[in-house]
Amino acid sequence: MLSQPSVTYTYYMKDASVFWAECDDSINLHDYEDNTICINGVDATSMFMACRNALCSKRSVFAELKTKDHTIDSAKEMIAALQKYVDKNDTITEDN
Image: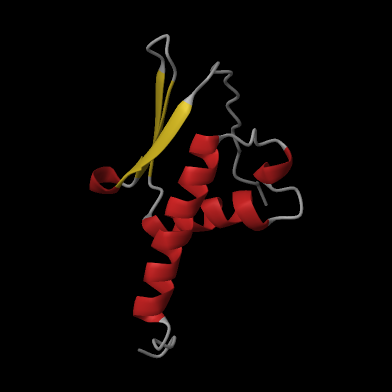
């Protein structure tokens, strides 16, 4: 039996920023030298789980994060958005 080939691409982008776009389910990376990478096919659930993995795994981003005022403000914004989501959906079960 032949295994399907796999491909790995590795890029280095200095000071890249990333965002998820709902319109085409894509992760978009952009740096300040006008380089852009777009990865399509990443739905909302996959993006949510990627964020969860970055924040909640044993080797989370917190060990590398520089704590500054804007970082704390962003964390508070994230907490508020998550709390709003939990409050709205806390009574929903998998069967609903």
